Image 1 (cartoon, helix red, strand yellow):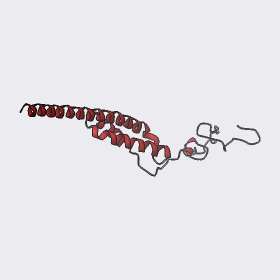
Image 2 (spheres, one colour):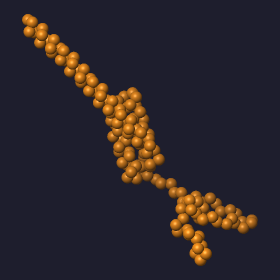
Image 3 (cartoon, helix red, strand yellow):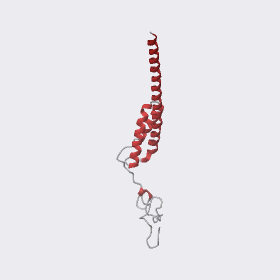
Length: 142
């Protein structure tokens, strides 16, 4: 990393391997935080072109699972879109877990919705089947 001829290797320095520097001489001011050679100089906030919708996906997933299963497919679709946008670098990855949890809750809520719809259709077939069979029986008796 450091040779006597070259001095510190600042070309390959990262925030974790910045070589230590000697403190300034007595009576000299300390360098401000973030000045060259300080670890703070490497932090650059990243601005993403799109706002994250991770919290929206999580709320829709929770509501779709607990209260209103109609919202669950929207959480699933929005969760997939959010994860794709995070992977593409268009949105901040800080709340990736929220998007993933909301997407999974959306999948579970959608399965529950399909189960309830299937039960409703089965119930309707049984009720209308009983009416038809009952109506045919009474018509045949006449």
